[in-house]
Image 1 (cartoon, helix red, strand yellow):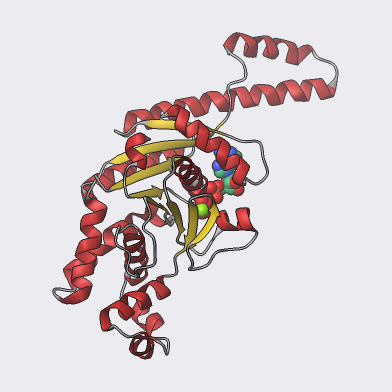
Image 2 (cartoon, protein in one colour):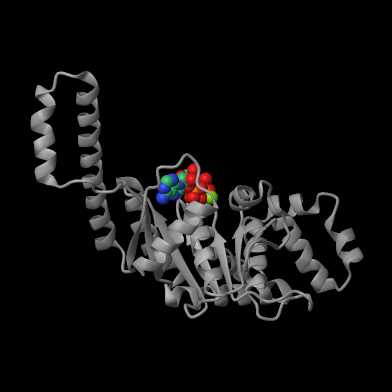
Length: 310
Ligand SMILES: Nc1ncnc2c1ncn2[C@@H]1O[C@H](COP(=O)(O)OP(=O)(O)OP(=O)(O)O)[C@@H](O)[C@H]1O
Ligand SMILES: [Mg+2]
């Protein structure tokens, strides 16, 4: 983790529902605790983190949620407009160029434009010299990536664009974004997986694609939501022996559920081994928290777990 939090940008990738937002928030808290000015970017208009902390989303504004921990919800349209304002040097002119549904039109005609605009804003946040002088730089930017294809498309988009736009400001910006993302001294990719067969297979596949298509290696893999191993094999056998004989239905049900959890926890450990064998990076685990919806306290707890395991 030391190495990870020393980067300028950490990309948290994974399929839908595996715990990207949870891991991004936990990493953000760990980083802020170390005194780093940190921002977590949510990209898919979900704003789950800011809603859990503040009761409302933060929108396209850098907002401090906890000491030194900021959040922003990145709007691709606003990001592209910002870029245009910088290019033409006038908010009014950029506004004229931009409105009348031009973004929607352009985005429909240009695959990857949304992703490029999003990654452009992420890149801007990660620069030590911010576009507007009064904006303070961040020590670390963490992106809670979109789920589609683990976010690989968004990571690759700058390269794709750079190839299409041969010259000009878009090309220059796309090239800068692309080289920043590919520079492992500055950017670290964290994959999040769940201890089940499909998510594990997909995470291994993602690690391979990241290597083949971006020349990047995973900096860290997080196996999220691991059930505790409450007892060992001998104890499980003892429960199994009692189960058949026990007359009280409630007790029998409790024993059966204990056994099924024991088997699930075991299957999860097998998946953990699969994952460790399939990815090059270190794999750390986070426990399953028996809470209906995770909030700031839970993320604090998980952030300490992450720190201990790294
Ligand atoms: N370790 C955990 N223990 C218990 N619940 C968890 C854990 N990690 C995540 N969850 C819960 O699982 C759900 C999905 O987690 P999270 O929102 O972090 O995933 P995500 O990958 O960001 O999902 P999405 O694709 O919807 O953005 C949430 O309700 C969250 O509170
Ligand atoms: Mg999420």
